Length: 307
Ligand SMILES: [Fe+2]
Ligand SMILES: [Fe+2]
Image (cartoon, rainbow, N blue to C red):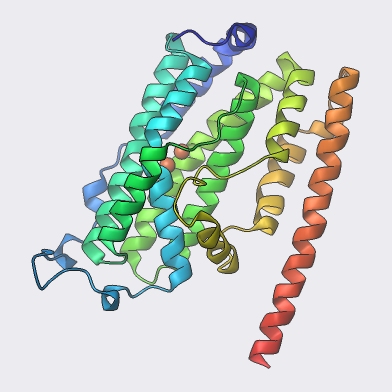
């Protein structure tokens, strides 16, 4: 499928950088095997009388929410593949990246599902029903241009890396921690590819990119919104400190948008892009303020409860 005509010039200008980043990615990412991360000896058959029961669940509900959301998000890979291939096309380094990235992402759902099934950490029937519901509806964010797509996936890969790692830290067993840490390492390499691609795109067309970044920060949503009960899960995940507005501000928007992409110091912007930059900076500032207030409120509630 050809890429959008409006995106051809940007993608052509970025091709040498994409080739460099692809080489760097292949050199840095090491081969690994999902089956080596799963405690198979803890497993047993789910035959009649041995079905999953709520007592099998040894983890707090918030961590279970995070595991379910993290896994179901990985399960929606066919739609991300569709959109990223549409954005980059099938040719040359772009097509090679999309395929390699898809192959790597496929391992994430394999390893997380095997781990959850063997340890009985979540109800496998509910999990499969939620997977069917999600994948059969195929709701995913669909950035309209290559510039917006790059900005979105950079932010999203980093958000996913953070969510996976914070989930792993809350799991009491070493196996679960290792699974999530391994997946997190992959997400980090994906993030670096897209982050550096956006940095290069900012040099090619700073005005288009700042407008794209502003649009994606404004409407940022994690890719799991099609998961049944997503907003309840998201609340539990925020409450457990796995992913919330403060993390989004301090660990994504400030380090990536302000520091790495240095949007404040971009020069030669068109009037429209200047406006977008102003809106972007004040939005980031506002998100920081709201997040800090929410964190203070939560700390006060916790103090009251423990007093
Ligand atoms: Fe992933
Ligand atoms: Fe990823």
